Length: 117
Length: 109
Image 1 (cartoon, chains in turn green, yellow):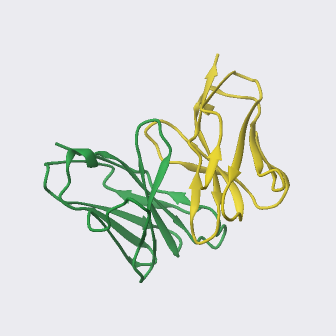
Image 2 (cartoon, chains in turn cyan, orange):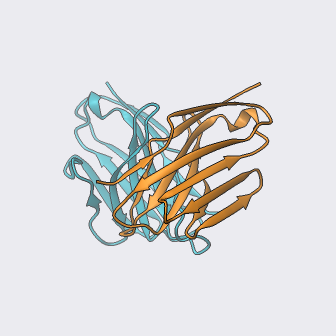
């Protein structure tokens, strides 16, 4: 099956610093990667969609200068939370699609729990 | 607007059968997916329906009626480990999938 690795799984940082989260598809080339944010006991909120080699498409209300997304290759996408503040504390999850076996399925990383002090 | 409606919570006992419904209203429709998420974990794919009818995968089955904009996930022979949140999601084209708010399933002994 398709595997997506997300790193780090947990990060604590000081307010004002930047945090980079990596998302890798390990055994398939991901034509599209998605970044979600999830608050406790709530649904997945799509932040942005990225395709390899092109700029990410951000959802309404998501600051593109705040949440920088880079999709440098077919197996790697990164999300950088710039100048993090306590309100950015959340669970961030990436997913990837494009597996030859099932192009319509999203495979999720394990998520990154971000705590900003 | 685009929306998916599913119950917020469902409680059932071990060994029982439970059905989680999902109705959707989206600008496009390519397929309906179901994902399971345990607390603190990542969503995992359960099933996908692009055409009307029932898809069966072990204890889990998923149904779709495109004319009714409706689908459901059926879980049989419930086990304690099935306690989790279940999300329906619509692939509406444009590389985007829209998720419902999720249904928390509590399985009791």
